[in-house]
Amino acid sequence: SADSTCSPQAFSPTVDPGTVPVSGRFWGSSTDSEAPAGNASGVRALGAWPRSVLCTVRGILYEEDAMETHESSVVEPGGRYTIAERLQWETDEQWELINGIAYAMSPAPRLIHQRLLGKLFTQLSNQLNGKPCEPFIAPVDLYPFPDAEDERADTVVQPDLMIVCDPSQCREEGVFGAPDWILEILSASTAWKDQTEKKLVYQQCGVREYWILNPDNLDLIIYRRDGERFGPPSGANLANPTALGVLPGITLSGQPVSEES
Image (cartoon, rainbow, N blue to C red):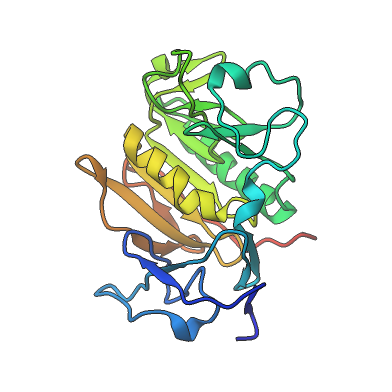
């Protein structure tokens, strides 16, 4: 289709039944026609693509391999690191570690990403003012697992937005333990990670609700905890006020933004 291409090679999407987009849009497929039939709620399964493949889907470029470090002055490609080692890196760059693998938080997100992120953070700050829950905007380190202070601990991430309702989790170094709610805004270099590796981290550590937002069309994928894992995802669009399931009375909404506005 005109707004959906992939290079350097064509591929057939594989289905991850635990991840779906909304409104019938098929994120991660080379064409909408390749999308499998929708489920009972009318949403369709997400397609996965091979590593190192560039895809433009609905105007968003997804570069899966761009997330990992390449020729960095502080880490070696293919290496594995601990939180303790990360703290020793003499660099101004932001890094995430997931199971010891270093992910560069650069280049900086697009303006559309940052404008939308700022507007959503402002909404949360206003609504949570005077309440025990506190919102945080990236870059704030999240140490999701109880072993964060162990010298072998190897996972620390920086969600775009998170809400923490237990003040004891907040320290000078960052947030320790699962936030109540997390939102990630997709970008070219993080889309794959947000929908796979980070989703698994958030599920394992006990995050109660996880939103994934497409900044170009405001489509949302929403995961809510069901026992020990996330339940089936639901879809929404942030053009309409959308309630946070874990915080009654708190809603978010957005309007399309552009690089220029």
